[in-house]
Amino acid sequence: MKNYDGMTDETLALLYVGGDNRAFDELLTRNQQKLYSYILFVVRDPELANDVFQDTFVKVITRLQEGKYTDSGKFEFWLTRIAHNIIMDSYRQQQSEHIVEPTEDNDLSNLRSEDVMDINRENEYVNAQVMKDVRHMMEALPAPQREVVYMRYYQDLSFKEIAEMTGVSINTSLGRMRYALINMRRMAKQHNIQLSLEV
Figure 1 (cartoon, rainbow, N blue to C red):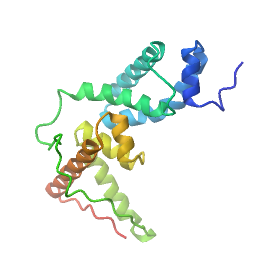
Figure 2: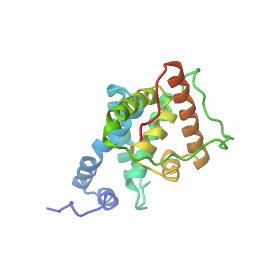
Figure 3: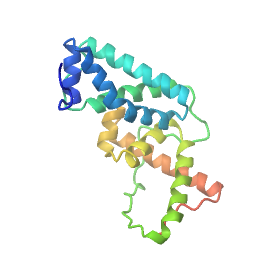
Figure 4: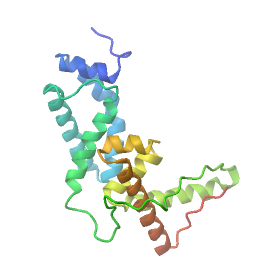
C-alpha cells in the first residue's frame, strides 16, 4: 500500500492518470475543503456550491483521463480555474443591471495600493464591525468582482495569480477590484456605513 503523505498534488494527479484511483481519493481529500469554501463564498448558495463542486470534480476527472493535465507545479490553480469557469458559466445570464461592470479597456489611473495598517487592541472591536460590514457588502457584488476580492484579501493571492486562475488579464483583474471598491463605497454611502479602520 502506497504512502501518499509526502507526494505533491501534481504527483497524485499523474498517478491517477496512470490508473491509481486511490491517488485521486487523496487529491480529493486534500483539496475539497478549500475548494468548497472558495465556491461557496463566490456563489453564496450551499445547494449551488455543491453542484459546482461536483461539476468541478467531474471535469477534473474527465480532463485527467483525457490527458489534458500536465505537471506544471500548479494543480491547485488548475483546479480553481475549472471551478471558476463553471461558476462564471452559471452567472453569465444573472448579472445585476445596477452594478458597474468593468470593460476590457479599464481606466486604472485611480487605483491605489492598499495601506498597511497596524491595529491596536482597543480598536479591534470597531475594526471587527467594519470587516463584518465589508463582508456583507462583498456578498452583494456580482460574482466576478466578489471572486477577485475574495482571492486578494482572503486567499492573499497576487493579481498575477488571480489573473492566471480566472483566465483573464491582470488589467481585467485589477479592473474588477477597482469596480468592486467603487460599488462597495457606493453601498457604504447609501447605508451610512463607516469603512475606516481605527489605527
